[in-house]
Length: 437
Image (cartoon, rainbow, N blue to C red; front, side, top):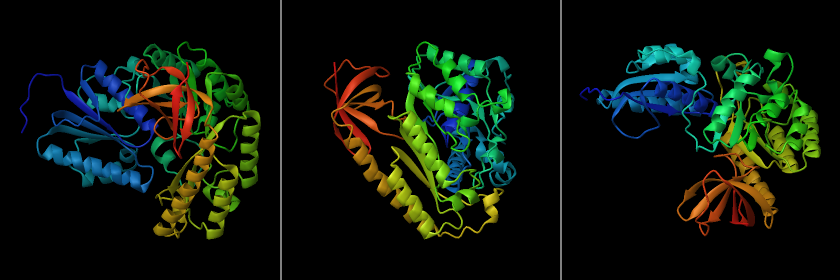
């Protein structure tokens, strides 16, 4: 067993799931650091006094990953490598009672809104005035900004409202203050996230105020790019499109998960939109912002999805040609309204359909990237790997989209700085470029 000493207590925070979870972890880490703890994110050393696992409970695969992580550190605790083990986040919010019974090695479970309780449990005082302080886990030149919590959408497949509650917008002045603090730390790119960006402001201001928020954030000195993630297609506020088009700080990039295109499937998903309205919205977006990059997410294998309905989706995706696309297979989640439906698409068929979508998207992405050859793009440098600098254009978000690969013939490049890059070659998901002076 470890022997106790008077050194600063070492806390290792593990984050699973989405970028919204990552922001929660960063806020927890910032609070702990201010209170005198020695804080790490996903540290691999064995000497950890306290481990806090921030879990995901969105779909079955995410739940399994969270459980495996808890089991891994439970074993470490049994071996005396960890003194205290705490679990927080979505999985803990949703299955707290079951987890307490099955995992007695965990010292305490917390929900998605339990930051004060975690701090109190660590026998220190929660300081409300530090709320919003963050210890960034991303490179210092970009950061996520969560503009709201929870969701009021009724999507039949989604368990997020069970874990995150109803939609709550963060006031504009608070977000501007948070963004200013990030800019003061050297952040140049804000990635706006929420369960649904387009719903922003309805609870606080009785109208959608995403456009106004964008205008206010763009006034902050030091912020050069603002990127929008998770825009719900139903009830899309058109004024946002003109802000994106006219404001040079807003990236020509919209992440709008559509999930499906067959109107019957969309109805069963309770998405509040039809194939015709979805197509109309995309055409309007592209007419207002001609050079926009559109990212979407697709779900295949929803209960009752026929081969004909899937083929309709595949054909439509081939016609629309999204710049970026991710695909999920349906996960049958208890306490969602879709749970009453029979999960009648076999797992093998779900995977086959997902593979077909991605195979087609790979070709679409290749063709679109080929059109970039010979063009010059403003590019931010994210990191250096071996003999190459790795960057992104405004049309690409970190970790999920294209990267620009630049051979290290320019030793004076700096991470977090912008450069003009001319593309000379392209693959499905990578661009190759040289610096233009």
